[in-house]
Length: 426
Image 1: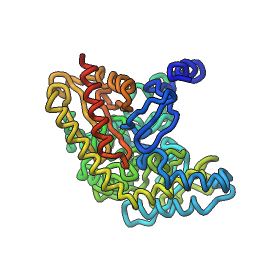
Image 2: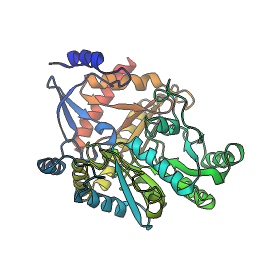
Image 3: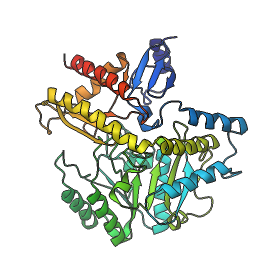
Image 4: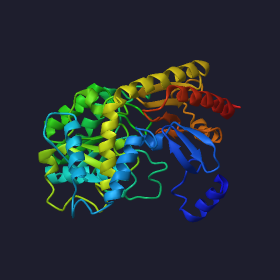
């Protein structure tokens, strides 16, 4: 069995829409290293798109999953629930930023979490409108594609999308969109598109994931909170990619000192077990009628066991602090590379261990270089490095290492990255 044969089988068996970045078929993995079916070792700078904050096969998470599987794997939390789901909800409620009492629900994917936020917001407010941001990514279902602010590749051929969704610019100093401009455009929607009294919620990522790792300032999030309070609009904060220690705090928006009405979580919540959640203010979460929320697999007992273990690991190993250290170490490497290629790397940025570089031509922010960002992950895969691209303009490489990654492995991976960059430019 080899990677090439498996890729041929995959292309014959799985629809092309579910494409894979590189023909590297995984056999086993540990912390930040992956071995493919041919025995090749790869350093993982993607962590399954920020899912494995605690690394591949963390022993404490693995033990919790195996212990749960010995007992039972499914009953459906809406039929015969179990203590682990209650305990994980209690932990999420206590950890969510703000002092207002919280409640949670469990679903299976981040997209489901976002959809349920929309349902809850509409049930609580009796209003239809949702405002989201350009460059935002919220999932691949029809509703979440409507909310997503990036066409290629997510929205091509899939419309029409639901109505009563409106997009506004995301504040982005690097791309010349000031906080004041973004806020003014948002307020203009109330004049041009939908009156504030018909808006149920504003949805924002504190750090845009697929959009390119741009971070909203604390002051912008605070202005959003005040605007929502003024008009009776709910503030939904999407922490799917930025949560569970990734940015240096358990949830990114706590750095801004704001409290969301509803918060989505997934990815890092359960170290690869399919689990997601909505956490929100208790009175808002209780707006839907009994039976109005849920799903067959939501709150899987195996996922909840993993989620409880993830909370323990984050606390015991101080992974929030570790995210800050890892991010700073990557930035040190990347700024050195930027100094070598100042006309090529327009920006190096991070929010904890959400790290990105943006490629441009001639050092000009207005001349994106997506061809290079597209090339690099494929070249890196041949040299034992897992990389991810992103960005609303397709010109960003993002680094999402496990928060448990060893520093010498970062050094090794960055040496590979530098060699791959030279190869891509040759």
